[in-house]
Figure 1 (cartoon, rainbow, N blue to C red):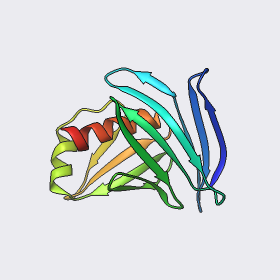
Figure 2: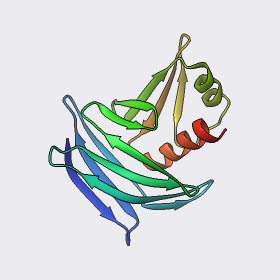
Figure 3: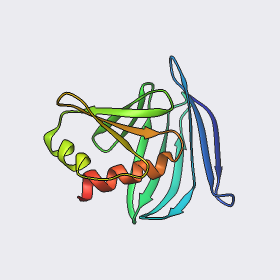
Length: 139
């Protein structure tokens, strides 16, 4: 699971190398960001078995992302690891509507046959998660 973790508040950088069964993900982003929203990584928790979680805030709302052996989970959503991104496939009508009506800077959304695939990139990972939670929880 977690192979390397760098949290540099002064240098404003976060990096984590996470090893999965068939690939390795390199997650990286700023610790603090102000753009279309305010984002800050506020805490990290690691366990002996390499599983870890990261707490972050978006516009003063706190969220926790849990990394596991197949990807990560946030709120009620589970993302699987892909090639340079994590993805969620959904056919939830409410989620389909919210995600298809929004223009994203960091997330990519692909429409398929009655399903939507949401991709969170490894680079700008938390900015993309911020866009996701703001869209699904507050729009």
